[in-house]
Amino acid sequence: MTLEDIGEPIPVGEAKSCAFSSDAARIALGFGSDARCFELWDVKNRKRISRVDHAAPRLSGFNFMRFTPDGKRIVCREWNHGGSVHVYDGVTGELLCFLDTTEGAGLAMSPDSRSIAIGRTDNSIAVWDLVEEKRTALLTGHLYPVHQLAWSPDGKCLASSAGSGSLRLWHVPTSREIGSIDGNSAFRFLEFGSRGGTLYAKVYGGDLKIWKIPSLEETEAGY
Image (cartoon, rainbow, N blue to C red; front, top):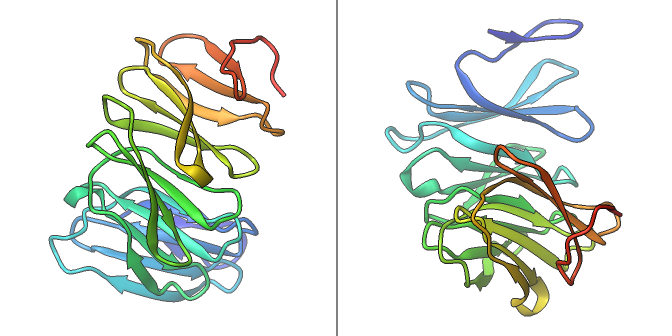
């Protein structure tokens, strides 16, 4: 398998995940199974920038791979082995650190590229500083594992939903819960409006819901 547009193809091989930088200048590839590694490629010059090999059987692939908005880092999460989060340099491809070893599903990056929020199977949410490589908050309150997360455009609020259908709103600088809704339908995704005044959520097999922020009053108009 190859990835190409004009010019020589980039060998994708058995890659299980990939991510482009925002300017499409670089592509990150995650491999599992027999080739447990991470590669970063220069798209224009069709040149591999780096390759990081992981000792078997540590890595079976990533279920999340994304460049931070500023392109300086690449955040990846493993399929298994506790769902460890790998952070690579977005320019050189160097492995910078592992951030979390508690399995979970939800993961979201802050708009300023500095922080990530990680949903954990112990029902909590860990917030990590990518620059300092340290955990800055542990948010607790959900009764089930957190699967969906979303940051507000200003990076001050974080929305989270658990498998039970509960929704919570957090003020990240103070680690305070500032709103909650308990439901019985899980959400497929969460997303803030472009100005941060509303929160959107798609119910599995159901409708799109919209709430005002921070009151969490349901509405029909988003902004």
